[in-house]
Amino acid sequence: MIVVTSRIRVTSGNANLLADLYRSRGRVADAQPGCLGVEILRHLDRPDEFTVLTRWTDRAAYECYRAPPSFREAHARVREVPGGIRIDRAERSVDWYEVLS
Image 1 (cartoon, rainbow, N blue to C red):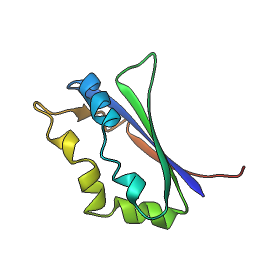
Image 2 (image 1 turned 180 degrees about the vertical axis):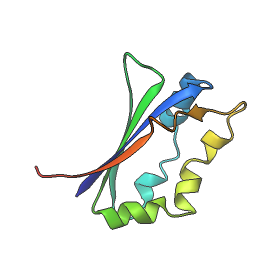
Image 3 (image 1 turned 45 degrees about the horizontal axis):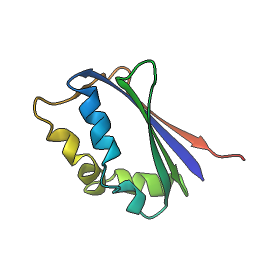
Image 4 (image 1 turned 90 degrees about the vertical axis):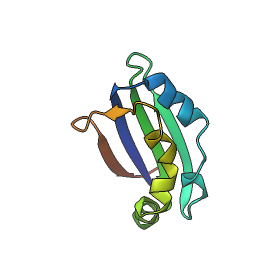
């Protein structure tokens, strides 16, 4: 099993709206083969910062999810936000971890 974390910081737009979108998300990732769960965290002291934590059977399953169209479908609502939501590219990160215990 692996865990993938994605850290996102909103630089312009409405971080509260993004939080609402995350709360009501369509669960596209959860339905993908190999997905073992998704958690979306919002930093308590920096409310413009989010961490998406996903668990997968292996890296290949995650890479299949990242391939279009599933990944695009999972993020479609964010692209439709009026005025947009801008993410700090320098602070955006994706990391993979092997679960040892």
